Length: 210
Image (cartoon, rainbow, N blue to C red; front, side):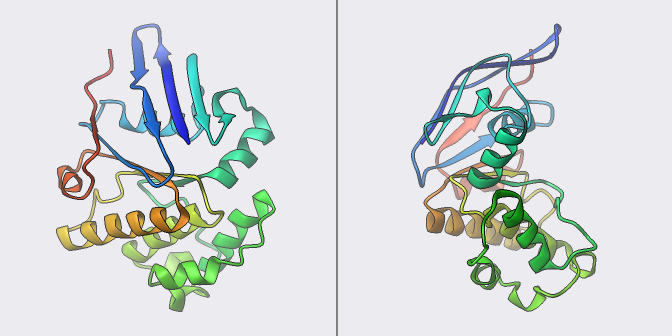
């Protein structure tokens, strides 16, 4: 379902970065661990189609992601990849429900599952609330809901537990795992948080950039 081969990327001639080969089936989980500066977020951005590699191939659901451009790339990403950023990328002036509908609109989805998704994530009662009135934990759940709004094949999460205590960190990882299983999606979490190792057995340890 996801195949990443021979990916190379560089910010400049002196800073080269090679992404390890990755092969995942639907429902698989992968934890990418590494210290700050090890390239974790670079990997996430490449897998999410936000950065284009210089060489190699990313095959997601039989589509070569690295060959897509412009609107075609945006639509494919919106339908097939759900990204949970470290800081929630949701629109503060809109309500919780409107944020999900916006994600649906960009790819032509109806969003019939949005309300059920909010129930499963424990924020159904906040569906009419403006995002800027939510707590940090509630905003993060909205970010997860938005990432899942279009039934993605691949879920990418960037440092989802970084600012959370042990109990809430465990709850967020469990939510991501449960939703990935429900959608039969592959789940990749990138983090420096060693606590997450207790929940995902498949690890990839990053070194530094070279």
